[in-house]
Amino acid sequence: MSMIDVSGLELYLGAGPRRRKILDGIGFEVEDGQTFGLVGESGSGKSTVLRCIAGLYKHWDGAISVDGKSFAQTKRLEWCRKVQMVFQDPYGSLHPKRKIADILAEPLKVHGFSDINRRIGDALEQVGLGDQFRYRYPHQLSGGQRQRVAIARALILEPKILLLDEPTSALDVSIQAEILNLFMDLRERHKLTYLLVSHDLAVIDHMCSDFAVMEGGRIVEVLSRAALESGAAQSQYTRSLIAASAAYDRDLALAQAGA
Ligand SMILES: Nc1ncnc2c1ncn2[C@@H]1O[C@H](COP(=O)(O)OP(=O)(O)OP(=O)(O)O)[C@@H](O)[C@H]1O
Ligand SMILES: [Mg+2]
Image (cartoon, rainbow, N blue to C red):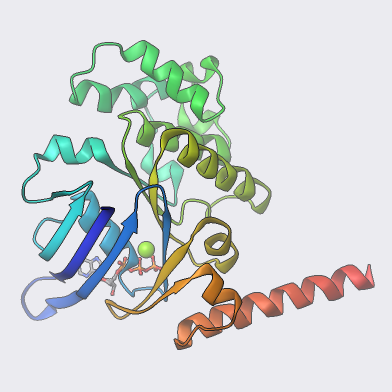
């Protein structure tokens, strides 16, 4: 049984004459414990797919199931416990006037947990932050630390699935690998399943067994990591990503040779 099962997903957004079909028959499955990637040009609908799965949009057609239960059959709070999202910009997603402990306590209160203190301590430890971070505000943290807090908040309800929307692209290059490795560790430790949006083929290659390429609200191809490496990509977008990343590698090699 797959952990995420999406089929025939369609969504319209905008009102009146601006109403447009944003997702057009999206379907894919993600096995338990895997990381499935979503790539595609800007505006192709990647974040919208994640928002539908997170339950932030509810007026779609089609079917979404997680862990064998459909969205329609599941109560909102139960769905939220299973499926959590991590956004690109950790500063925008953390309330600036709240201490980290309050930010982490909020979902626990909504879901009626009583051992809030212990859970906050555990969550901070899981993302490699000490207990002193409880008393800080988001602006007193580095970008990488803020993203760790956002990850702790996503983990605090012990979800099965994390939806990751370009979770490292706002971070300094030196921090990106650290955060990606944290995601890999957490996936093993907590038996998580990930759906990962990225523009960076190296990130997809590092994290994902398979990924889908989106164009104009549709999936135009699904590739495995092995197919990517053997040059089997058909779609124009994937080919341009591969060309860009090959050019980057070549420039880097030339720069290093010249240094
Ligand atoms: N609330 C909205 N009302 C109308 N159109 C919207 C709304 N939100 C998004 N869209 C449109 O839906 C399309 C898909 O947007 P989405 O944010 O999913 O793209 P994306 O693939 O995540 O792009 P990016 O790589 O730039 O993040 C875009 O054309 C966007 O303009
Ligand atoms: Mg997006």
